[in-house]
Image (tube, rainbow, N blue to C red):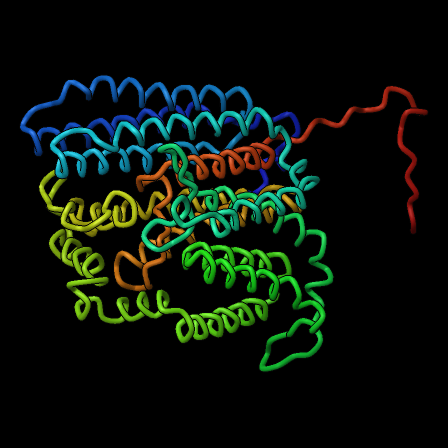
Amino acid sequence: MAGPTTDPRASVAGAAVPTRRGTEAWLLGFAVVITLAAQCIVDLTATGSLRPELATFGIWFAALWTGAHLVVRKFATYADPLLLPCVAVLTGLGLVMIHRLDLADSGGDGDAPVQLLWATIGLALFIAVLLVVRDHRLLSRYAYILMLLGLVLLTLPAVLPASISEVNGAKIWIRLAGFSIQPGEFAKICLVVFFAAYLVDKRDVLALASRKVMGLELPRGRDLGPVLVVWVVSILVLVFERDLGSSLLLFGIFVVMLYIATERASWLVIGLLLFAGGATVAYQTFGHVRARVDTWLDPFAYYDGSGFQVAQSLFGLGTGGLFGAGLGGGRPDEVPIAKSDFIGSAIGEELGLFGLAAVILVYLILVERGLRTSLVVRDPFGKLLAAGLSFAVAWQLFVVLGGVTGLLPLTGLTTPFLAYGGSSLVANFGLVALLVRISDAARRPAAPQVTPQRLTDAPTEVVRP
């Protein structure tokens, strides 16, 4: 009896490959129920009654995912059935926590309706990507254009006046006429597409080894150029935009994709050494980096200043304990900027360690399905692109939660799908759309081969003894 296969195309000829769209529909319905139940608990706990706006929110939220499911059913029939439900659960819980913090701050809705509007725009982008990008391999043709676009988006805030680009010391925004956008979130996707195309084209050269040192096959000196260029770009982002998060995210994604493409562990070692060197120089040279590191090492020593946010986050997590204070029963509003930077702390306080672990598990499922797609899809570009996009979500989550829990210095990144912020939410919906498109190509059954009707139509084959 044949064993299981990871490639759904390798099925018995004539056997139908299930689309699993029904599974996706049921899971999306479950995600909507979880969101509405959590919203009801927050209203009952915080206000003692269900607010009239709950019906409008429920209809709007359900309509969004119904539309997204119908589009996937039509234009990405064989896509992974778990990707969209994971995003729906995370987005819904984010909306609930933002609403809960709105009630604590002002006693009514403030940012939650805005976030729901951003989710609507994000799903519109999700649908647009699925409609426009019918074959993910076509993106490799525009790799260098996307690289240029990504670099422009990444560096644009650095050259703009601080009055329209700087928030909390970091120059990563564009604010005009009451509207603000963080272009680096979209630059991330453009650069991942470029990295995938470039590494597929150059991986044979980058995999060559010059010598073996302590069991590691080191690359040739002339091949160090790409990683050095990305390292320099990440340092420049840190210097001119004072954005530790984007710098760390960009460099980490490239090094891991380089390792996946070449299967050389030496690239990881080189990346870690370059990161350690850059971090040391940045700590000695730039005051804002030194302040963040010192605050990270001992937040309570700076409790009246830069350490207040981290200290309050740790207090909240400690108050939540294993099971949490319950939705609406804690004081997550005691943490500054809890809706964006520290929403993980708010979830940990009200849902406890088990609740926060459950949220992390949903992220892990999302990342795992993306990596599974990377293993199943046949073309090298799709493999690297799916792996890079999946790692981008995992790496960003690790860096953000590391800052919230005191494991890492604060970086200013936001938690994907959960945290308040339009740029992050919309960009990540575009990222998931690409994963859905690649997973559809990976799981779609191969077209049946046509049997020649005449002998002259049969292909010529040379058989060697």
